[in-house]
Image 1 (tube, helix red, strand yellow):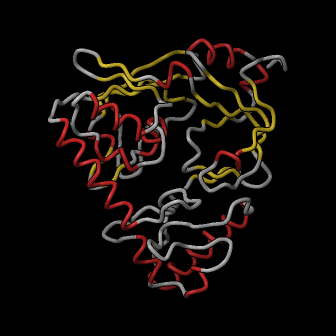
Image 2 (cartoon, rainbow, N blue to C red):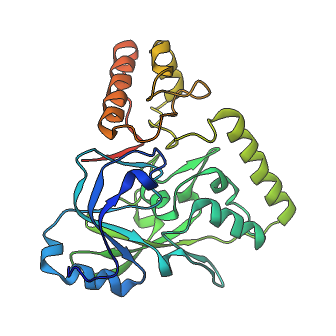
Length: 291
């Protein structure tokens, strides 16, 4: 792309915006305000040849110290809006989960209270089928609207055509999630607000607050809780130091800012090895680490 492109940020400092306050620089980050921006971006032959990465709220992504030498796409503008249609909500991928939950409460739409405590964006949520309190985004999703990079087309797929599973959402290669269409169920505004506050209270009591944290580090293996496996496999040293686990919840970090991303990655590997040695289970990362 031409250097005068106003949508382009060179050497984007991911650590400044990451929830872990850690991470290397992104060589070329493009802010996408509307669909035509994507078409223009991927019209460039030198762009198509480079590796690409979509980033959202950086709540669940860590860029390694060497940085990402490629094209990063960050949706904004049109993709930060929520529109109520007759039979569904059209939600941009850049809309924050907590914002959508509050929006639904204001409009007496029930079923989205659980999103109030999730730190990411709707695009990331759809990507990994995020959820909590026995609810997942797939339960509310009607369809996914995405950009096909290879064919430079906007495509819509119904949830019935997609193979969503636990922490496995829409991860089709060479695509960028743009919008989700969501179900509308009307409810009582007070009851909706009460449930949001109930979930918030549970989170505050069971998860670390006001610390550098990315949410859960590992997925829960089948029939197991990751935090229990971790807690029973490690010693007290894992709860001390600049990179440490939370004493409130062993599947969460509480690291100091400006810590090496590579050191965090090594710390994660140490935890995996401890759990594998003790329980013969390899924990799968929920945190996305980018080389």
